[in-house]
Amino acid sequence: MGVGALRQDPTLDAAAENHLGYMQANGIVAHTEVRGAKGYTHDDPYQQVIAAGGSNKQWVGQMAYRGEMGACLRSLANSIYHLQGITGNQETVGIAMRDDYCVANFAVVTAITDGGYGLAQWGGQQLATSASAYFPSDSAVVPGTFVPGNEIPNPAPDLETAGPPIMFRVNVETAADVLTVETFELRDRRDEPVPARILVSSDSKPGSAVVATEDARIFRGVAFLLPTKPVPAGTYTASFIGARNGVPIAKSWSFSAY
Image 1 (cartoon, helix red, strand yellow):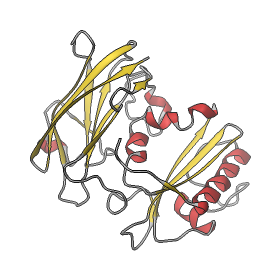
Image 2 (cartoon, rainbow, N blue to C red):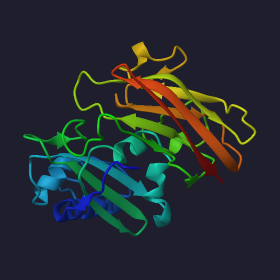
Image 3 (cartoon, one colour):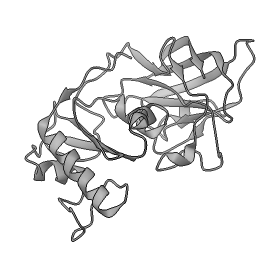
Image 4 (cartoon, one colour):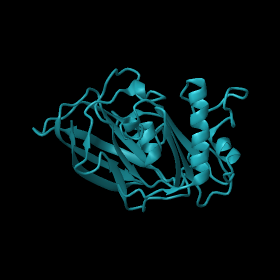
């Protein structure tokens, strides 16, 4: 996608392994830990990394999962909030996978003078201001079904099932940067439009199409198109028209669903 590679950090690995042990011991899936519970290391992922010997000058985000191991990291791509997270500006990663549990810690390190829980939108690996990234990427093959309730928090509580989330993102490193959406659509191989909703950040909504839905959890540099029903197997074309800081952007690409 062009968003950069990640380097492995042993302290993020160790913290992920510790937290996996906590989840397994307590039979739960969570990012935070409760003091006094079996396997407790620290309250949140940032503090868990510090407890494992990591630096306090980084921002740490985490993915936690329980289920079939092959789906652990795949589930991140077939999502909304987690997809925007894993394709952001983080630089390092630590992963623990065993016994049907999976934990991945991600961190932003460069240009960070403090730290905390969550992924900072500044620093780290940034797209060039003239670049964009999108998923599914060109010629990708993805599931035709997304279950919003499997993602926590749920990005579409009114939909039991939906189609594959489609993401478009740009660089918005400074607080003044913003991505706005004029049109964002999906068409099938017969060139028929696929019913879908556009999700944009609260900052992006004022300059975006009236039909765009505001979602406070969407990053300022990200827009999503969510088909409101699962899509049949086949080839689809996504088209995005919008602007970064008023500079027009137009992009179309194709992918397949199964």
